[in-house]
Length: 312
Image 1 (cartoon, rainbow, N blue to C red):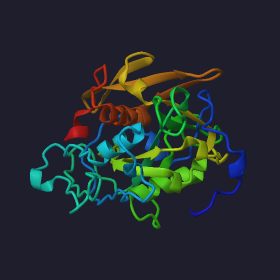
Image 2: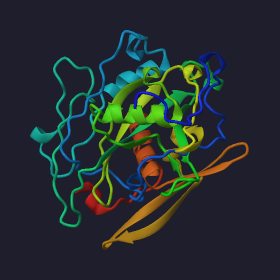
Image 3: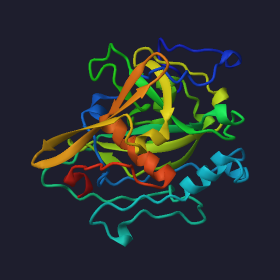
Image 4: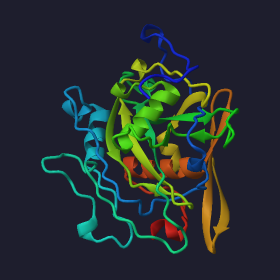
């Protein structure tokens, strides 16, 4: 949709406040299948070409590397996700001619697991990163990387009150996964797509029922330009958390579970703000662990122990 949904709160740009305080929660209304996936790792998605938009004249890529977010944007645009297990080099993601980014067009193959039927449903989520201005200039010039999150509305029939990333099911009018993620973020939290520079698309996650969920990584260079506006039908609160926490063992719990004979770990991260406490788990936690590993170029300080078929 091009505009906010009915009932969406809004505020004029002149009265905008910076990203909601660290303690706020974001609830979003993404189709329930996004949350039925437990905690999972990427596997072979249905064939799909994904495109990261080319940099604009005001892109972070026009800034020197001394600007922290500019250096990050350059590196992430060159990022190439690993091919799914069993995929040959020829089937690997292709980089468009003259493109600086490995997040350009990617063709992906599908190998069907005998333990799971493929599902053609597709969704995308936005991992919107920004820098905490408390340690720098406030517009991406220093500070820790943080990620925007939501807490689903308590009135939703599926997974009410759970923490999630902005995103949802792909619609017929969406050109690609990037368009889906940006549209959903605008509808759910009032994030203007023009404020976000999409820098890469990570390897899709496939749920136990075969839903493909595509993580789209974008950078919000000027968080002060964003005026949070929750869609009350989908989101209770918008909040942010440090991205690096998803690589650390502190404030993390893990439950050993078994599905169809395979043992795996369900990770839960506790995040405390001034007046609220949030639990980030399942699909959202899995995506953020993978995102943090890519951004910080190191594995988590704990074992992920994903289901075997997620990599097959």
